[in-house]
Length: 499
Image (cartoon, rainbow, N blue to C red; front, top):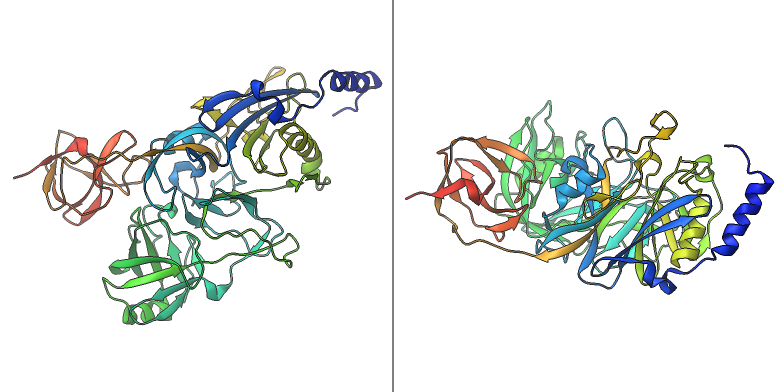
């Protein structure tokens, strides 16, 4: 990029004089109401720069933050931000700590950095209370987090103390260490798989012992001596992988750990799962006052550009250059989702991290701010409509082609709507697949969950007992049914009662 001429500098100063900084709280008339607790505003800045900002009231109980994964999987996948938002719109959530609400996705922005070939996130992730992907130990920063107490924070250096990631077998008061979460197995290790890994645990060249543990709430980060309790409902020895229900985890072990589990656990046994994240400042030495316990949503962040009201100095080249940016900032009243358009010299150049920090501090009165993935990934969607101009450097002639890039995950602002249920069927009732075409049996109650099996018309099954039976999600009512050993969730629209 060429240096500014003297005339350009004078012009910029003239624009700044004519357009002084107006704190967000003083310019309320410029914000457009989206839904209770949520407003949107466009900023046309000198540069030029076009900035899209969505703000959410931290104390408004009608809205919350949530994360979502492309293809519904934290193990890899790619979709546009709009597609990810559509996937989770109308789906059940666990805001409050249990499955008691339905998402109405108000807005979405792209999330963390990822491998563009696989869609695997390059950092950790918490979704709807599930710690679905671990953050790396002993790195200077981790991610942006939102807790069940409606507290936002930007994570510093973290560590997972090995002896604090534990399965406690309540019958015998024995403990087994959790070595990994949602990754491939290693010999003599215990790996914990959550539903965000996928519909099944990975296949293996050798037989593994796997315990399916049903839980009544998401597997929140809760340290010893507490934890999330569950009941063992299935024990298998398999090479092909085990189905992961939407409300369960699978404990997978090989070698000596598998032998120990087989001798100590039986179907029906209760156990407690405890996880802990130790939190430090970026130097990985001094304690950080923010706790990861009961984090509801989190994704990896990159550059911390605003720390306690102080704009941070420029670092590596990627922070110095002007680029499209996606960021999250907050103060004691609002959380802000920010998307800066860029790479368009006549429309919006983009910002450096220092410029982003100055904008968040002076225009939004934010105290803290961190960047998400930026560049061509930077996207903001409100009520299903794209509101910014993504620029992934493709062009036709001299004008850029603004098209959405596929990404791995996203941040949402959602309204949590109350559950609605049907009472058409009851537990223990025999039903059959109706119609003339095969019907999908899914991992959980909603089309956002993975497809398990395709059932032929006339296939009979029995309705199983579950607290969410009849729940309306993704525009259908859902029932948990056992079709001769094939267990999953089916839409009420495609089953009929049998005598």
